[in-house]
Every structure is written in structure tokens, then in C-alpha cells.
Length: 358
Image 1: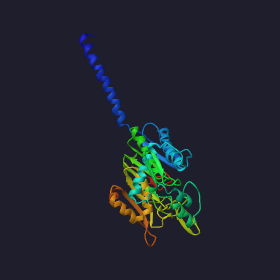
Image 2: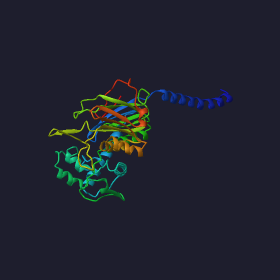
Image 3: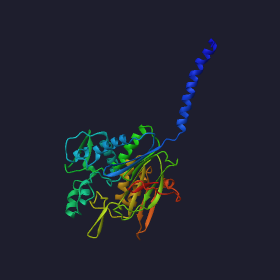
Image 4: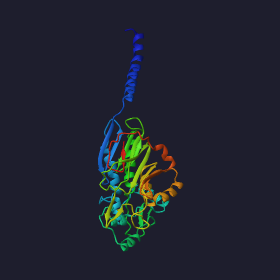
């Protein structure tokens, strides 16, 4: 081989190498990644997570969720919130302070309808982490004296209570926050297409396996404490957003011929009694959606509409009963484009919550 050909070959080999690398990259980019599906148990409920990635990341997902549990779960005797409730000296972490600050903000915006100090009332009525019976009016009045979001503050990284009996209950926001934490974990791993669902609260991003936005069914409200009725009321198309649904039709009990729903009005100390049966909220993150969905169940349709005038960024879908007991719906203007066509779909039951992934 002459000198000229050797010189030409030295230039051709690197070019050929780059060409091969480029071809492999293009082929890999064109090959669709599989969708992983993980299921587990956290916060006393089941989670379902679907995401497009070559590798299964459930170990990392569980680690992220257990960090949330160690911060916010009252069922965990070593959690930060448990130690706060027991008035122990404890170092607060960012998860706890972020959730507390958001809860405080939503409490202010809803006039106290969302209230993380409602735990004593919730527990007394039998829907919290202690089982109880319908309390006497005197008991309710006594508990109300140390319930109220203005009775606890976060000051210089410490929780300051006006009364040591104040207890915190983040059940109306923790599952939503957990969804956000998992969503952040997936994004940090370069994943764009996913849906995270924990006990009915959801974060959706990108597209599903059919290359369309994620379709979520909102179940029809019925007196179904055993959660056997999964009839769909409507289907929402969601992507790049947090979604939460709160309702009184799953969690209730009967005593003395009366129905007691799990949503407690912090102002009265009693379960709410109004026409709103289901509140679905779409927001920039799931924790925000979760908190407002809970607050709207306290406020009812008209009270919620008043809040929405100040927060047009929130999208809502309400199911309520009219004067004759017939189910009606109301949704905010921004929700109209999210409601899917009726022809959608064969329903694939994905979880036991108030929503279904289709």
C-alpha cells in the first residue's frame, strides 16, 4: 500500500467509525422503549406507576416513597409528623416543611376549609388513624378549641403550637405530594412519558402507549364503602399535570340510621352535609390538586366556585346531587378541553381509587 493510500485510510477509518456510531444511535432512537409497570403499597394504599424506560426503577421509586412516609405518615411511629404530634424535639426536613407551607397556603386561600390540624376531629369521628364512634356534641366542642390552621406555625425551621394538643394530619395532601416526588424522580432519570397514581391521586406526563395523552376515568359517586362499583362517570385527557379526586362516597359509615362521611368541616367539627359528591382538581402539581380537592369537598359547589374566581389556574370537575337526588356535573371552563369523547374506550381497571387509567 503506497503512502497516499495509507493517508487516505487514516481519514476514512475515523469517518467510518463515526458513521457506525451514528447509525446505531438512530436505530436505537427509532426503537420504541417499553413501558414499565410497577405496583406497590404505601401510605395505607396501593400505588400504580407506568413509565417508558428500558429499565425497571421500582427500587428507586420505593426509596423515594419511603422518604415521604418517614416525613408525613402518622402510621409510622418514627416519622417526623408523629414526633411533632407527640411534641418531641425533631429536626424537620425539606419534605415536611414544603408540605406544611403548601398546606398553610391552601388553608389561607380557602378560609380554613383545608386544615391539617383537623386530626383530632377526624380521629374522633372514626376516619383517621384511630378508630372511634360518633362523638357527643360536648366532645366535638372541646376538640374544636385546639383545631385551626392558625394555631400552628413554622418558625425558623420549627413547629410552634399555640396548644400542645394540636395534631397534624396530612392525609389530604400527602398522597398527592408522594405522586410529585415520584414524578420528579422519573424526570431526573430522563423519563418523559409516565403516569404515577397513589390511591387515586395522579401525575401524568407525556403520552401513553397509544401515543395519546393519558385517559383517566372518574368513577360515578355511589354509596360504595366496599369500593365494588367502578362505573365511569366521565373520562379526562391529561398530560403534564397533577390530578386529584376527593369524594364522600367511598369512606363513610352508618350509625343510628345516619350516614357519616369522612370529610370533616374544621369550622363546625362535623361531617359535611351538602350536595357535592365528588371533586376532581387539575393543578400544576398533585399536592396542590389534592389539597384543593379536599377543601372543595368541605366548601361545597358554591363555596368552591368562589375560590375558583381567585384561582382560574385550577381546573375542576364536580359531581353533585340536585334537589331530586339526580347526579349533575359542573366543570370550570378550562376543563372542557380535557373531557374525552364518549367513544373512548375499553376500560382497563388499574386501581381501586376514585379514578381509573384507561
